[in-house]
Image (cartoon, rainbow, N blue to C red; front, side, top):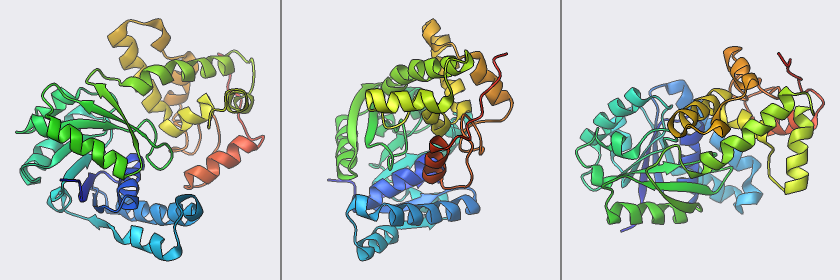
Length: 306
C-alpha cells in the first residue's frame, strides 16, 4: 500500500509546503488550520508559488491547475484526519502538540501513519498522546519542502516497520530525499546547522563584515544556496534561538550557546522574514522574492555591537 491521501494539520510555512509537495506527487491533500484566514492565505500562496515556478516543476498551465485541485482546505479537524498519512505541522509548543495529537488520534483511521514535523521534541514522548505509538514518527523538514528536497524521517522508540516504510515511500513520491535518523532531538540537520548560523551572527556582531557580504561569501565560495544569516531569517530568529538553547542545555556544548546579537534581535521582535525584518528587510508576504531582493540590495541594517 502507498499513501494516496494526506491530511495536513497547520497551514503555516511548513504545512503548506508539505501540502504542495504531496499534491505535486499526485496525492490528495486535506489542509486544516484553526484560523480560516491562514488557510485562505496559504491557498493563495501555493497558487502563486506554482505559477512562479511552473517551469521549474515542468508543469503546463493545465497540470498546475490539476495540482491545485488536489489540495482541499477544510475547517474541521476530523475531515483532515481521514487520510492515509496525517502530518501535524503546528508551531513548536509541546502542550499544544500533545493536545492536537489526542484529537487526531480520535479521528484518524486505525492504520494511518501519524507524523509530526517537530524539530525539537521527542517523537517517542509525543507519540504517548496517541493510542498507537507504533504508527507514529517524525518528518522533520529543515526548510519548507518546496525550498529544500530533504526530509529527516525520525523513528520513535516503538515505530513499526510498516509505518516507517510507508513514510519513506511517501517522501520519494513527493520528490523528497529521506534521511533516516533516530529519536535524539534536535535532529541531524540542526545539529550541523546551528553552529554555522551562530558563527555568521558572531562575525556580524564583531563588525567583521556586513550581513550581505557574509552570506555572499558562503554562496560564492562554498556554493551554498543561501548564507547563514538569510537562512536564519527564513527559519525565524526566535526558532533559531529556541533550538540553540535546547541544544546547549541538553549537550552542554558551548558551540550551541546563542550569540548575544541573536538574543537582542529576538527581544526586539526582529524575527526574520515572518516579522518583516531580521538581518534583512522584507517588503511583502512573498518570502522568496523579498528575501532575494533584500539580499541583492544595500538595504542591510548593521546591528550595534553592544
